[in-house]
Every structure is written in C-alpha cells, then in structure tokens.
Image 1: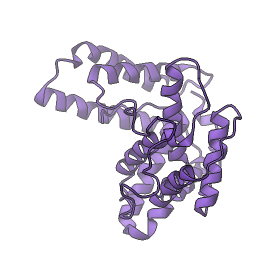
Image 2: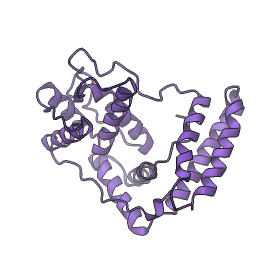
Image 3: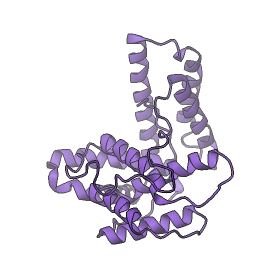
Amino acid sequence: MDLGKTHIPNPKSQPESPEEYCRAIEAYLCRKNDGHLIRIVGPAFDTVRGWATRGVPMTVAERGIDRYFERYYAKGPRRRPVRVEFCEADVLDVFDEWRRAVGVPAFAEASAGEPGSAEASAGEPASAEPSAGRHESLPAHLERAVARLTPLRAGTDRAMDETVDSIVQELDAARASARGLRGKARALFLERLAALDAQLLDAARMRLSESDREALRREAEAELAPFRARMPQAAFDRSVAACMNRLLRDRARLPTLILE
C-alpha cells in the first residue's frame, strides 16, 4: 500500500448555500452518469435541499450516491441515467451511519414530509431497496473484510504488509467457526474485531506525514461545521477524531472490521 507516498488532498469545501450544494451534487451525479446531465430542479431540488438542511456533508452524499450506483450496476448493464431521487435512501442511510460514527446529533427540523423525504419519481421509490451490508452475517462480514484487505498488500510500499498479513490470517482462521459463535463467545470475538480494526487504523496513521494529518483534520472540521455550534468543545473534539479516522479509512481503502 503506497499510503505513505500518497498526498492527502486539501479538504473539500462545503457549499455555502443550498443552491451551491445542489449544483455540486448535480455535477457529481453527471460524472457518475458518464457525462449525462440531469438537472436538479423541482421536486429533485427539494430532495437535495433537504440533505443540505440536515447537514449532510458533500463527501457523505457522494458515498450514498456511490452506494446506489454499485447496486445498480450489479444488476447488469445500465438501462438509463440515474436520477438523484433514486439515491436518497442510500444518502440518508450513509448519513445516519456517519452521524453515529462521529457522534453528532440530527437536525430537529429534518423529519418525514420535509424536503429530502420525497419518494423518487418514475415509479422507483427512494426506499425501494435496502442499503448494502444491512443485516450482514458474521461469516459474510469476515469474508468481505478479507477480500478487501488482500489487495492492500499490492504496491511498492510494503510497510503495512506484516500488519495486514497477520489480520488476514486471523480472520481467515475465524471464518469456519464464526457462524456457531453465540453469547459470550460472540461478544469476545466482536471485541477482538474492534481491536484489530484499531490496529489497522494505527498502522495506516503512522504512514501519514504531519501535513497529511493536518489536511485530514481540516476536512473533518469542514464536514462537522454545520453541527459545531450545537456541540460542547469536548464532544466536538471527539467527533473530529472519529471523522479523521473515517477519512483515513477512505483514503487508505481500509475495510471496517467492526461488525455494526
């Protein structure tokens, strides 16, 4: 993994108005649709404006859109350009996951029936499909984690090979008995997964330069900016640290070993 030689880019700036947010989402969706532009107007604009009102960071919205596209392409050849309304359930799912991971509250004014909760048009409701990974079994989770860890051993920088190899071997060995784990034995194994996850993040963090760490902090603070005024300093600091871990995981393409 060439993480140590990879420059962490400057943080994405959050759009300052709902209109700018919608245009940024429109541009991202256009790229995902191979250059096919579908204007975000009318009900679609209300949907995306609802994301901005809730404080959904651009990077989170993009990951939700990516999640929809992954399922869409998994069905076979693309039939038509994807409309933004189709992605709403995934965007809000990823946002909920992000909020829980970094420890920030939801906006009280964001509720059902407000902008952002509309169903998708063209007979394809936003909630038509569950998000990927929901109710995943422990053996399936371990198999997916191993599959995502294995490519990390490629590249010219082999600094993390020892860490990755030991984790892969441990998860591989655990897969056969994972299905039968119950009660205390399962709880202990889930604790072990959390420890391995922390070990993986620590190894990736050590490969960062000081400037890369600062870039991650700035991006984390930008994502959390809509919630800053409503959070005590200690809570905000904890959220920044958690958000930095999430961004590092994305940059290094690390799987989440914790079963959520």
